[in-house]
Image (cartoon, rainbow, N blue to C red; front, side, top):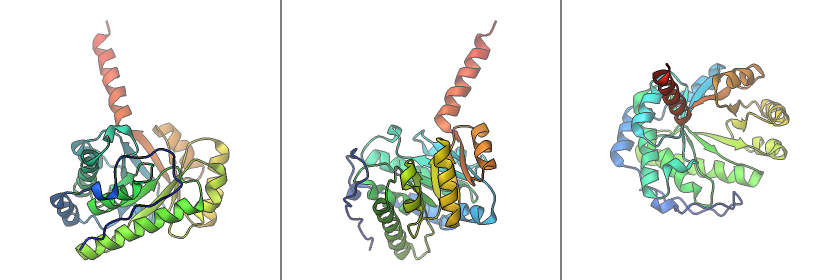
Length: 265
């Protein structure tokens, strides 16, 4: 029997999603396909333990076909960014997320399926749906204090344990806060169950503080970059995880370049 996720009342954001945990559904066929492909093996944790840089792509195009292609390009991880408006609101957006996670898991044994859940009081439903679909890591945005982080870790662990009891497999899911607040770094990374941390590429003080705090705890630190040049600079400073591209930005840039080439005299 599947354990239903509870509604959590947290100080996460004044923004609220219209979705509820009970409204999130994952197709059994997608779930079965992800499990058959070995979705419980965690390539991201394996990569981080090896000590190498974990380079990823952020997926803001809500498409399973797009996610499948991205997983085959050689990235260490692909992040389904449900926090973006492209995924809409309601069961349709949830189904797209689940399909994208399953597509990544079934397309590559080395590219981890990562989900950045949206803000708002109903985010636990997305955690459960993502883990049910086979996600290897959950990124929790806008974490600003210990209470928020502890609740996120607890929910991820509950969802992984509940799903593991259903399919009989150990579900190894990394819990990664995305920290934007300088003052929150130390208390957030000190919460038991945090596997890594991600910050924005600026300001420099946040990067320095995050590196010191996370390394003190023995945690890898990631940075949200928009291109390879920024990622290389941050990796040289000691970051181990970096996003190097956003799919919708790549599409826009390539489309404009080709149009300009065609229009050239």
